[in-house]
Image (cartoon, rainbow, N blue to C red; front, side, top):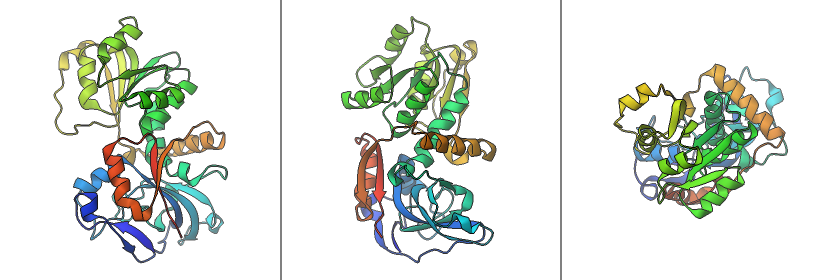
Length: 327
């Protein structure tokens, strides 16, 4: 099969290889997916740069979509021919979706409604599940004001849509006018330009000095500083799934304590099974009922995998980046 892989960490153009690899065969409990699309996420490019390899080579990317063309022992043969999207394909496994085929546990291939594109399906594993889990952890947001950091990002775009469906008011942080337009199209009520505006002052202005009820956050290193200045109301809730500076982050303890804040953290790869199953079910229901708008910012080929990784690293594309897999 045709695939992209790397055998050492480094810059995409220095380490990525495109060529032939053996076509995998499904083990017991597995399915093989003939991939049509592979989703490229920031965590994929970060892994290529720094995460130790779990084998002699890594075929990257956890997200993808395609058709089940083979099943292993113990898997119902009725799954043959099923359209699916994948999650955690390359999490703690060396073989991801940047290839014509991938084998993975049957549960990690979720049914994809017939009228949903493979491109959209390749956005569900990390962006879709992260967004839904964050909103579910946030709890009842009806009539709440929620600050969404990175509201135009792949995750933030879905978060904003989900919050609006639940009756929340959304304030989003964005980096440009184009990204503000993208976030507002998803339902954001207000967009704040974090590069040029005083986010804390603007949030207080929009909330009558009270601060927001909830924050759904992609950059804890910045947002924890906002919280020390009262951007979150007393007894408010921060739900965080990432940070631009993942190393040690100074925390001002007293504002957290005396405002009785609740802080919730999660990583999408490690959502407990009893929480992931309903997330997958709800996402598929939303897909079936056309309750999500998808934004594909760029489509490239497998031969352009280096460009794909560099584009994601640059962070300038609005919407998800997918690789279309030719057969």
